[in-house]
Image (cartoon, rainbow, N blue to C red):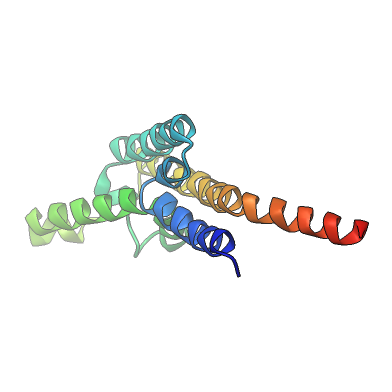
Length: 151
């Protein structure tokens, strides 16, 4: 394996991890700064708009909304920050407030959908970053095959 192939095999997982941690960061890492910033703003604004609409306690809820939380986790750092914020809000509630359901009202549902869609959108961003990181390796492989086939 050449140094170029080795660096390409490392670039893809790093780009994917960075794209998960902070949406768009994988693209910035690959040198696609404008695309990375657009993706960062789009995914992050969608996620935090959902939290603002639904409230952090009702929106980021791994207990009542497990499947939606799974989708939200795809936004990485945003979900981690929102979950920590949710925990802080929970700590300040009285026992009676903790017993009251927080997630059975329309704005909470809208917020959950926004944050879930942001997570699924970032999943596409992650896959795009990984594919773009692997593209030079795929192009080199196809060139090698073409060269080998012509001899």
